[in-house]
Image 1: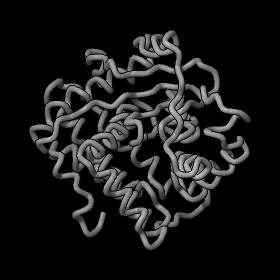
Image 2 (image 1 turned 180 degrees about the vertical axis):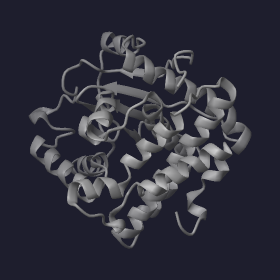
Image 3 (image 1 turned 135 degrees about the vertical axis):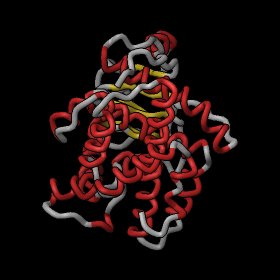
Image 4 (image 1 turned 90 degrees about the horizontal axis):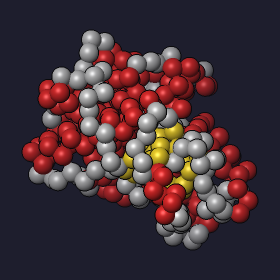
Length: 302
């Protein structure tokens, strides 16, 4: 992928090197949760397929009586350091991919949906940090927090993709970032709040999981929409790039992850979609380049 000529985003908050998490609460936990509770919730999330960030965030809200996550207090010097543009390869890459998503979505979202695009902020961290949704841990993988409108990324995840999933290539990594930005696009469009309300009203865990799958597949499709429009304008893609993205989507499908960890897959527990679904929806977005093609909620089957 020809990413080096992309514009670097100014909306990157680099918290790497701040030491284990900047959580700053007694007992080493997030928002008053002990480290033992966090570990248990992460294990539950891994087994059930539920994003641990959601479990931890929910537990924190229960601990605080349903209130919002505490705001992190940051001194001006720390904030100034965080706002400096990354100079290392992985940081530069993340900033440039984010910048390109901004350039693409700020143009096509108003044209295709009539909605103005408000950029997200990407938080780069190492090990752990605070998010508006609670504690962010590297084991969670990249995620988008709708409460603070930020994408959280431990850049060591790129190495994990290569070592744990056997997925390599800059476009595979760009796909991961574009997927999380896709969740922000959903938020801008007002989709995420509606889905979260429906999940709270769901009659079963199976129904709630099915809604989550549709949200995730839509984000895959929106990543494809970004890729198509970026390539049309900047000729950004090189031979093999799409294969890299499809390899990434294949590796992180719920069926593949569950088969690797359990030895079998349980479709009713899927929260992100199967490998086949994730690849298919990415290509749906890539082939059309149109946001409207990504409406996973209007299809009988995903």
